[in-house]
Amino acid sequence: MAGRAGRLSRCGDAVLVVGVVASSVAIGSAALLAWVFGVLRPAVGVAGLLVGAGAGALATRSLRALPDLDGEPVGPTSRLLDGLALAAFAAVSIRQFGWSVYERGGSLLTLLPYNYGDLPLHWTYVNHLASGASFWPVNPILAGERLKYPFGVDLLSAVFVQLGASVPIVLVAGGLCGAAVTALALRRWGGPLVVAGFLFSGGLAGWRFVVTGQVADYQADVDWKNLFLALFVPQRGFLLALPAGLLLLWSWRRRLLRDERALPPWVEGAIWGTLPLVHLHTFLFVSILGGLWAYGSRRVRAALPAAAWASLPATWSVFQVTNGFRAASLLGWKVGWTIGSGNPFVFLLLNFGFFLPLAVAALVVGVRARRREELLVLGPTLAIFASLFFVRLAPWEWDNTKVMLWCYVAALPPIGTLVLGRVGGAWRAVLVVGLLFSGAVSVAGAWPQRMRLEILDRAEYGAVCGALAGETAERVAVAPTFNHPVALGGRAIVAGYAGHLWSHGLNATPVVARLDRLMRGAPGWREEARMLAVTHVYWGFREQRAYPGSTQPWREAARLVASGSWGALYRLE
Image 1 (cartoon, helix red, strand yellow):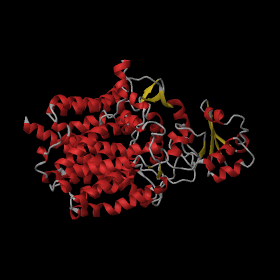
Image 2 (tube, rainbow, N blue to C red):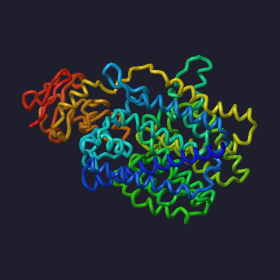
Image 3 (tube, one colour):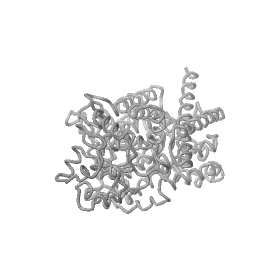
Image 4 (cartoon, one colour):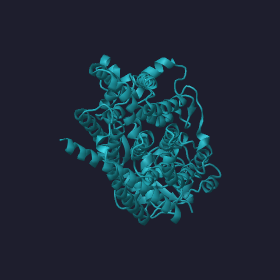
């Protein structure tokens, strides 16, 4: 049985390494080739996939050089707990990602409210890139802007769409594959505690279930939400960023903190160097933590080879997604994070529950016992976590949770070894239940379908895409919304949903004002269209509602491309 368990574990590690390395290298190669040739073509995507597959196959051979891998400790565990944690993760992933896009009555819906706004945005990016976007791409939801967003996972999805796959299938399949690899990475980082801890993350809000008897996502009512539901499912960059970052931290823990054999430097460099294209917050967190580990363990020279491999691709990637290192302008002071005028103690207790007390207890035990490894993990992690209550990383301070997630996941293994591993079984059960109960209630509450969350109407979407087929459109003037069929079809629009634009740090006010004058048919509307590079005007029920009383001068002054029950499309001559 032990031999069989070891083979299964090694097989899982091989899947993890292949999945992360192949995906990372494919994204980096496709992005670089598209940038060199100026456009994303199917040949470029295929070349990226082949390079990624080759790198993944080579990377798996490196696992043979880690003979002690089967016996590596992954925290307080048992086969039963290991199996239960992975089974729970699989069941929830299948439910959430399997129904991230599904059809009912001619409409494509999504199950999770968190996904309602983000999924159409990723759909837009995927179709825009798959349509043969020039590189570096323009922003498809704001005129005059370059796409300053780590769209690596959407780029990989676009490659498969160019090869004939449908967007819904790619989104569902990508989510399921990303979840599987993430579960393996969480387990390798800290065993069933980290797998279950991430899946059932939360604070104390879910304990309302004891009073109400109603199963619901109570954690959604506070700022620290269930991480699986609020971040992992809707923000698709985490599908690769989370397993990639964990694989790096695991390898660096072996190399820098334990002086053991780890993944080859070229493997670490390939993952690390392309990470900014996937998720910039993750890249910053693992880079800071890895640097502090190298310095704190006095093994800087051991970290240099991986840094050398990563330096060039990472610099290029950061330069591209920040538009020449300009993302620092998004940083700002925000003392208190989202506490506002509330009681800080109540806020921390309600939002984070048992996590912060357990983390502090682990830090105290680590200091007393002089546990260097745990202290080098906990110390920087909790310091970064605390700093996020004083600065914001984006215009919306809630976006700090993208790094707080990493602080939480990184701190769980030391909590397991220094606190949970030192108490009796009964107390351990109490602490684990206290840590996971609220998040478990949230996950259970998100299981059934309660609302009709429509992403698009299939008939309208098909008609609009058909009307635009064969049209060379630089920008299409439409009403700003999060799921407009023109944007979902991959065509660049003048301005998208205001919440997306603001949260990405884009000043859309001048563009929206010009769009308003254009869509109302105000004097000088043609000049506004030229300034916005608008080649087409779309007019449907959304536009009628957003711009009542518009004179619609393009009906006489422009060529009608197509019309129907969905609306009308005009080309400006």
